[in-house]
Image 1 (cartoon, rainbow, N blue to C red):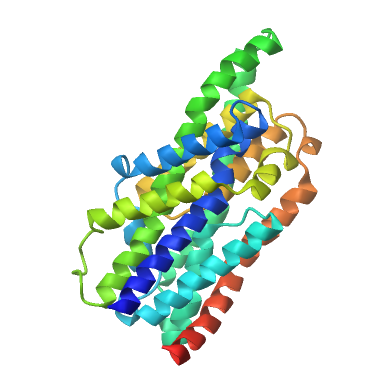
Image 2 (image 1 turned 90 degrees about the vertical axis):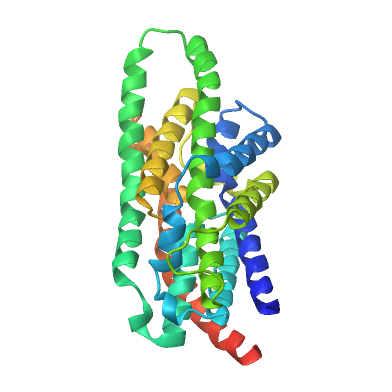
Length: 328
């Protein structure tokens, strides 16, 4: 029982770090366009992270709980190794200022720990392929939608004064940033719910087809909201201005496209990366100016962080599983 409580605590710590690490995704554009101060932006993002549980069904939690590895081989040692691997990689990429994916870090940790525990047959490959496909689909969809939305907006505001356009879109960006924060909380908090649920299932505390209890839902949303409040300012700079310079109407277009992508993925029960989504959306906005407006050197660095996340997390998860098994 003590080990189970330890697992729940480290999952909530991961959820907190997820909010801390990914807060930049929600607020980078609205801070970089100077619509809100950093403190006001994180407070707004944290609020919408928390209330997301009122909006979205728990489909992503089910995918993480039973769609990545075989639930019948899950042990508390396996979960501990997977979550600690995710925490370690998140902290490494945060320190380096790289906007990597907390979602794929967790998936990689689970896969590596499961393989170390029970071999390659313990992995649900259909689920992994679906998640892997959205490593590409989510940013591409965000990019295409933001490109299209930006073209439409440019057509609508053609001939208007830049000052007037900025004034209107500063207000609209409050809505788009709130929507993206809602999508962030709805998709990302559910990943931690799925882990806590499968830990309880491994201990025989919940039936196989049950939903996460309300206390799990509320605690996970509270943890990610608190993490967002503390923010990840090293990554804000990369996301907000290093990829491409943004104006308020461009921030609105990027956030709107990102939010729509997250809403769709959460409705389908697919755990996606908010980082990948907003990065693709920002690139789509930059591409409407000219290809050179996107700083491809920074984008390439981010891309490699994405590619490495699952395999590196899997290796860390496998190593930690052997370590945890020896200690436990």
